[in-house]
Amino acid sequence: MTSPTTIDVVVLTMNDRPATFPQAMASLLAQQDVDLRVVIVGNGVEPDHVPADVRTVTLPVNEGIPQGRNVGADALAGPDCGEFVFFFDNDAILPTPDILARLVTEARHHPDAAYIQPRIADPDTGVTMRRWVPRLRAGDATRAGTITVMAEGVVLVRRADYEQAGGWPGRFFLFHEGIDLSWRLWDLGRTGWYAPDVVIHHPATDPARHATFYRMVARNRVWLAYRRLPAPLIPIYLATWTLLSIARIRSRANLAVWARGLWEGLQGGHGQRQPMSWTTVLRLTRAGRPPIV
Image 1 (cartoon, rainbow, N blue to C red):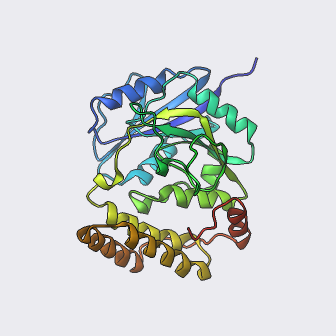
Image 2: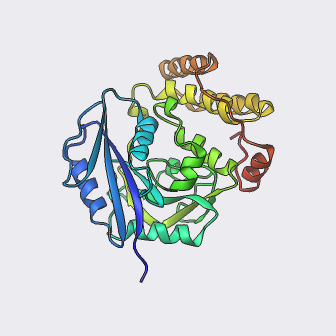
Image 3: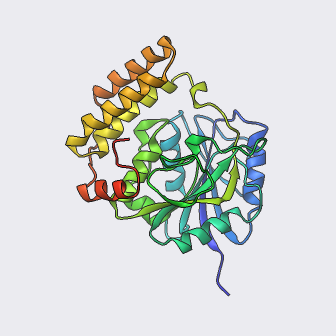
C-alpha cells in the first residue's frame, strides 16, 4: 500500500475575511488521502483564525501576493517538503474532500505538466469566468487540455519545478505573476494542464475593485515583457496589449491610471532579465498561445 502524497499548502491572509477564511481552511483540512503541510502567511498582519497545528509566518509589512507565496513555500522547504505545492486563495472552497487527491491523480496522468489548474467556479452561480480559463479560447470552460498560463490563486505545482523556475516574481506585488511563472516553467521544457473536472469554488469578484488595478496591470505587463521575452518580441507584445487596453478601458480616469502604470513599467524596476528561448516561443505558439498575446 503506497503512502499518501505530501502536499505543501500556502495560504495568505490580511485578516480581512473573517467569514470566508475559516470556511476555506476547514475545506482544506478536510481533504483526504493526502498528507498536508500547511502554512498561513500573514501579509503585514499576525494571522488570526488559525486552526490548530497549522504553521504561521508573519511578515511585518504587506509584501504583495507573489512574494507572500514565495515566503510560504520557502517556510515549508527542506528535506521533508512535499512533492507538490498547492497555492490556495483564502476565500476559495474545496467543495469535496477528494479535490487535492484528484489533482495529484491528474499530475500522475500528465507527468510533463509542471502545474495542474483546476476549474474555478462561483459557488452561487456555478459560472466559470473567462479570466479563470487559462487559454485564449475560453468559451468552453469544461474542455481539458494543455495550457500556457495559469489562474494563480488556486493551482498545484510540482515542488521541484517550482524551485528550479525560481518561484513567483516577488516584485509584481499583484497581477500577472502567474504568466511570469508559467513562462519560466515552460522554458524548463515543462507544460501546464487544465483539469476542468476538478472544480474549486471561488466568488466571482471583479479584480478592478482594487484601487491600483489599472496601474499594476499596465506596469506588470511591461515588466513581464522585459523579464521574459526575446528582445524582438518586446515591442510587439507591448503594442498588442496597449491597443487592447485602450479599446477595453472605457473610463478616462482609469485610462489615465493605466497610462501612469505603463510609464512606471518603462522606467525599469522589473528585476533580472532572463528571456525565454526561441524554442520555448515555438512551443508556446504550437500550444495555442504565442507569447505576444
